[in-house]
Image: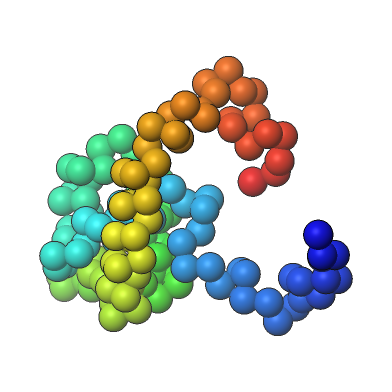
Amino acid sequence: MSELAVDMFDEICPSPMQPLRMRDKWAPMVLRCLEDGPRRFSELRVPLHRTSAKELTRSLRNLQHDGFVCRTSVGRTVTYELTDLGRSLLDLLDTVYAWSEEHGADLLDAYDPDDAEGGRGGLAP
């Protein structure tokens, strides 16, 4: 086994630029909801009813900050829409969803609901 390089995560490493932050589990679902065009917040709440308004707002702000979603306000109407950069992630999401579907049973078998660390094996998020 090779040694890990000391500069593996150097200052110029792009790891902070990861497109889908693992801490934001709603981001991929928000991107999917915006796939067919602009949506209002209330429209996004329908398929994302398991998240709170606060969590959805946080996801939308993160996606906007990262350049994947744009927010447009006309009068009292606010809509969210994928940018070209956000749209470029849709093929990647297709790949991840296909992998998840193929390995769904394995993921369920590996999941331990009694794991106090939430399945992280004691590792920090």
